[in-house]
Length: 71
Image (cartoon, rainbow, N blue to C red; front, side, top):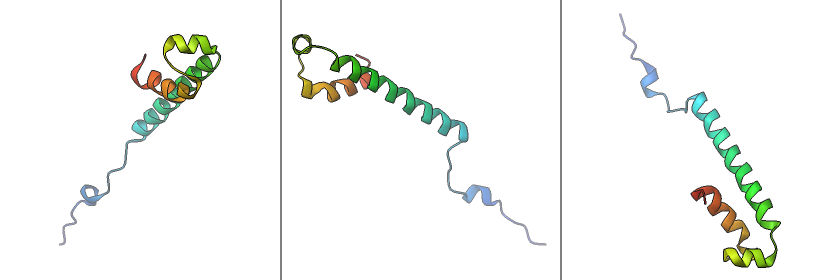
């Protein structure tokens, strides 16, 4: 009688569905935070941006930094 070896050990690693859902919501939350930071920074005057030490062209980079580093 032939014994079949389990093919599950040779299956490619696929992320758990819950892990993929968690990653999706994490990405969604980060995107929402970025959009809110962009909106808030864009609403500031040039003088207020200068107080933060940034210019209008720095806003996208600064917004990303706010999201990633929690400033």
